[in-house]
Length: 198
Image (spheres, rainbow, N blue to C red):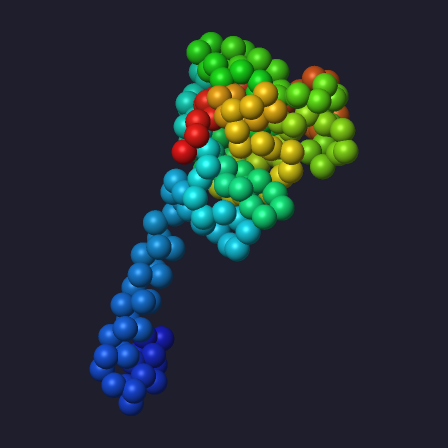
């Protein structure tokens, strides 16, 4: 017996109206799961239910990398959601917030260095002293796609001097080693996009 047949037999005594309600609810749930990531999506309590800022990543350094990053404000952290394609498959890639909202250069060097209002050295994203723009690496799957979410602190979703609005997100070809100065030896900048308020 198929799962949906068992469900129908279980609810039949309760009446047809309940049966139809359960079927409609199941259909909506399946549709939402199949739709994949989208702007303003919510994940879980405390993750935020609407994107406060978003980024459209465009290829740089003759790459084919593109995608999107969006930020939601959680209870204790800022959630950094990402959906990026065209990456080298099966490896980690550095991703950072950079100081300038300028992706005009072919190699994205116009975005400047890492966002670092505290003047700290580059370090692991959980270190006490680090760049505010330091983030975890993201791992691409066998198809070169990376999807996920980071929970990070020290990100101000504003246009103040300490905020990230109007700055940029840069994706790198290689992983960030979280040690090398000034940017973790993460290689060429293969995608870039400006952070805009939602």
